[in-house]
Image 1 (cartoon, helix red, strand yellow):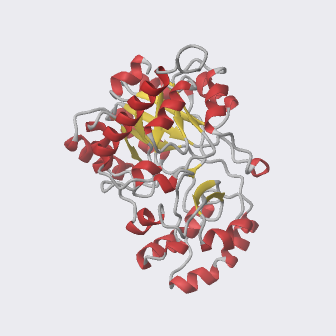
Image 2 (tube, one colour):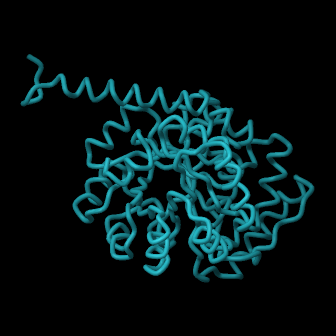
Image 3 (cartoon, one colour):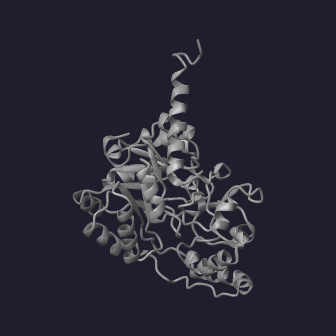
Length: 361
């Protein structure tokens, strides 16, 4: 790892910030205590809600941790398309006995207020999703002693991250669960994502920044592969989703390894932006018709998702998961970090057993 990352975590293992109540302080603390880098997800929280979770996390660990912010989104959605989708979802609202959400509930996720809190009360690391912050923001965080990371899904996006002055880039492969961190939402590129190993190589040849690899990683051997490909550390989300410390709904945790949910797809059905989840009824019925409208669709479907979760109905929930979901292990988070580290060491030892030329003696 780069020296800056080494200062943050003893092991090259970063817990992905999963918004929606998954990345709670207990999970981040357990990962950081075990030698990884735990993360809180500030997405969909108020600035005060984020601050209260940071205070709680600081009470659980003295180790470094990170906080993730969503970048404000430009206005590009077609209101008529959102209205049509709302009409299509009226049957879901009737079924779950709830109202649809207000699609105009806000676009910036309280970004400025959250950034102000993080500058007044600095944390060890801050990462950004859905775009690149301005140089002023990154410089201000650096002066406050905060290490900054920005997600990129292409080499071009990684170059933009370096130009803006971030300390590291998170190379997110198409295998990743949850939302793709593309800097611009371009419907014409749906389904054109880059696999993680190819992306690491392209990013490594494009920028000089430390690279954190993200996307479908569930085992220490996969971390070893990412490091061998040029990454400095690996970020895992779905692997930690099943842990007892995760704030994910129990139905969501169980679905990861349930044979009913055998595959994942990228969909706009729940949020209006491409996100990878387990294929269920809601995704099959509404995904083909969902408009490119984030966060409007996210706000629109929020009551539906909450009602489905309350009813324990996995077929109506956003079951975010990466392509490796069937490999999920319901271990305590600290034990999972230790297991991943042991697997990583074993993979490195196995690789070192091959002499030059790739053949065993």
